[in-house]
Structures are given as C-alpha cells and as structure tokens.
Image 1 (cartoon, rainbow, N blue to C red):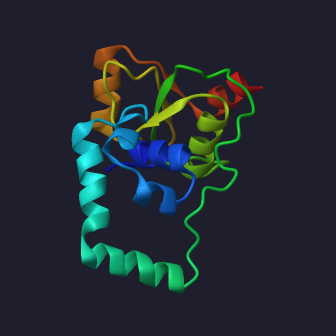
Image 2 (image 1 turned 90 degrees about the vertical axis):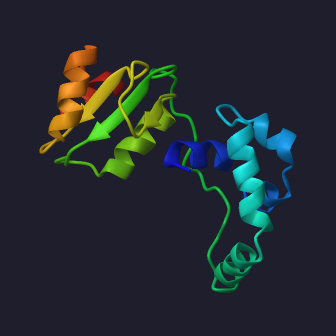
Length: 150
C-alpha cells in the first residue's frame, strides 16, 4: 500500500492495535479503502511472520500511535490533490506533505486527471513534468505554494 492509503488507515484507526482488530467492514468504511485493500490488510496481520515482526518492533519501543501530524490548521486546500516532485529549498518533502494535510489537502504519489496541483522543486522528474503539462495541471513552486497558505 502507498503512503496515502496508509495515512487514511492511520487517521481512521489512530493506533496499530485498532487497525489489527478491525474487520473487513470497518476497513472498507474508511474513505478510499475498498474490498481488495481491506483483505490485504487483514491477510497481512494474520500472517505469523508479520505478527512476529510487529511484536519485535513493539518490544524495541517503536510507537504505533498517530501523533498530532494531522491536526487541521485550515481548510484552504480542502478537496485539492497535490503531487510533490523535486528537491525544495526551505522545507523537506515531509514538511510540505504535512502542510498540505494540515490545510485540508490530499497528497498523491502519482499524477492523474484528479490531480489539482504539482508542487515542484528543483530537479522535478521530466516524465511528471510532461504528464502535468499534457493534463493542464498547474505547477507551483515552493514559494507560490506557501503564499497560498498565508
């Protein structure tokens, strides 16, 4: 599963124990989680090898609880989907993803007709640039993106 789906599950279940205990219907009730993903999550946690890995991680002190990452600041980006590409001057990709989420937007790993904006830094991938251009998706610099939030 990708980062977006993982984030949806983390936001919905808040910790790993809740996710492990979730049944098929509870998983499918999460936005963007369908039957196939729900079955994959259940199968993953039913596998004894994966159970052992999770157990060892817990014993090592890894925390499986959602922190304050998704606390909303505004809804200025509500309903907007972003793809981040390239290297940025002032903020890391993770910081930019967090800002998008905190302002109601959604991160995506790939460009599609549902993408609203590309947040592009230096060395943006040429294939992403070309696909965005063909689909007519606006490409924002880091500075342009931050000015939208202020």
